[in-house]
Structure formats: structure tokens, C-alpha cells
Length: 255
Image (cartoon, rainbow, N blue to C red):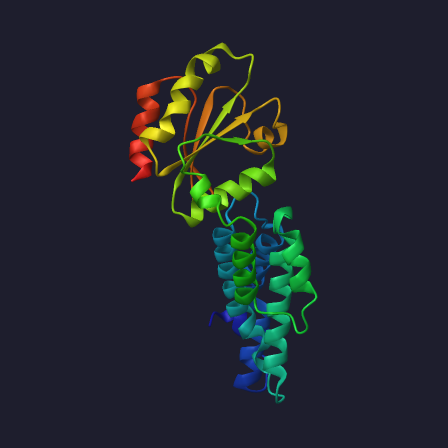
């Protein structure tokens, strides 16, 4: 201990009190980490993530926060049953934040989960979401690989198709086009034939004039644009009509 610190705690009577004083004075790291993780949890939304990736991210943040909170709770958990009550309250708060961040396509099942008493664990809620997704769109995975281009008209429709592609472990390609674009008209027949060549790839197409919300979500500034998506995340992009470049990337990511 330095002389400056020693002089500043000369009034302390025993080692236990000394440790408490020093801990209160210098242990700010946990508070900062808790703040940062809680802020990230509050700001986290599903967005373009598939439901599995969103759940995994929220669960990881919740576990990190719980570990950091444990230290500050140690002195207050002596009362019988208090630990279980506090843990359940933390789990419920994390579940509520998880449900808040869900995309609106899950609004119905979210409402059902919120009416449960007691609230389920986040893992149980995730299981219910997956079941509902499969029940509402049982043929989505097969529809994406039947040799056709899937036209996208809204963000919700895109999320459904990307979720299905993720469930099937398929690469998805989202092609942004527009009717007045000359290069797009030139390239479209080639793109239309790609599903027959690559049956394990999901081929999607969105007109930026008709699906403005989709184009805005993906920050499209040029057409034609091709977004390569795996498990709800963009892994690459092609902004050109170079057929060879597009097919090379399909081969690279479809495997």
C-alpha cells in the first residue's frame, strides 16, 4: 500500500473495515461494466438477425450481467429464499427486454408469453417462438429452394424468408433492382435462372421503389445490388452486373 493511501485510511480500526473502505473507493470497474452491458441489452433489437442469433446474443449479455451483479449481491443474499427471488426477477427483466426487441412478426406469440403466470424462462420463450415460426410457415424452407425467385415486398416478408433460410442453413441472396434501371433489366434474366443452377441457395428480389422499407433497412444506394446473407447477417455484397463475380461468390458462400 502506498504512503498516500495508508495515510488516508489511518482512521480504520480493523482489516475487514479497511478492505470495505478500499473496495468502495477504488472498485469502479464493475459498475462501469454493468452500465455498458445493461445499455447494450437495452439497445439490442432483433432487426435483421434471425431469431436464433438474436436470442443467443441476448442470452450471452444476460449471463455477463448476472456474473457482474453477483458480487454486489453477495452481502444481501443471506436471507433464506432471497437469492432465488432475486435471480427470478433478473430473468424476468431480461425476458421482457428480449420480447421488446423482437420484430413485429412475433407480436402474437409475444402477447401469449406475456400472459403466462409465472413468466417462462427466456429459453422456454425462445422455444415457443421457434414452434410458432414453424407452425405459421411450415413450407417456407421448401418454398425457398423450388427453383424460383422469391419477390420481397416488405421487411416482415423478408424476415420470414431469411429466418427460413437460416433454419435450413441456406445462403440467401437479396437482389435489389428497379424497373427503370437498364443494367437491372439486362441482368434480371441471368439472375432468374440461377435457382436452377444453385438449388441450395435462397434467391430473393426486391424492387427499391415498391419495397422502400426493405431498401432503407439495407441502406441500398445503388442498383443492381446483391447482398449475401447467412444466418441473418450480411457476409458480402456485389454492386455490379459482373456475372462471373456473382457466381464466384455464390460458390464461395454456398458451401
